[in-house]
Image 1: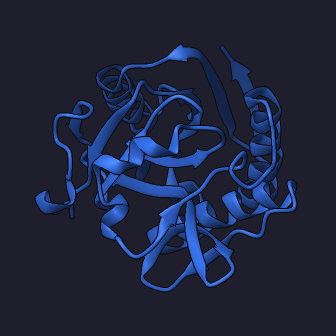
Image 2 (image 1 turned 135 degrees about the horizontal axis):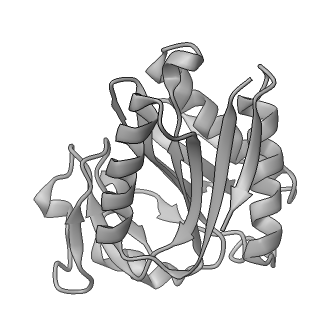
Length: 218
């Protein structure tokens, strides 16, 4: 068995701080000097550009700060009311399969949403989790990961109760024909503390089939 640490940050964590701390932790995990980590946090309003980002999708470059994330994917938004989970796992302890890892991340989100009677769905060619709304569908969670020497970082962002108008400055994930939604937008009020509990319970179902344990440090 191996230990996975859970860290929950209060307040808003700057993106620069998050990037620096992830870099440090990933190196330590690879060196065997620190346990794997799931880090739950919120950011101030900002946009991030993934490695496939198209500048034309940055509609309002002066609306919020824009950061080069270094992860896969295109432009996305982070801000208050959105639960970001940075996932730093040693994939060599699992299946050394990046595609399977991304699928597990999607399944994790889908399982969490199911606890609130929200049907999250996958879409071929579109990483993330979607909610069908009649003839349209909206994205409720974005997934962008990076793997270095088989240690993952970055992760998922799930819209709990963000200001959805903040997405207006970008074409989210390069997809203009669909919108964005949140748990509150779906009529599901939930506190972040409660949501974090569901995140952990679902994570254990999806990722801890080998009996790994975890601890929470905050």
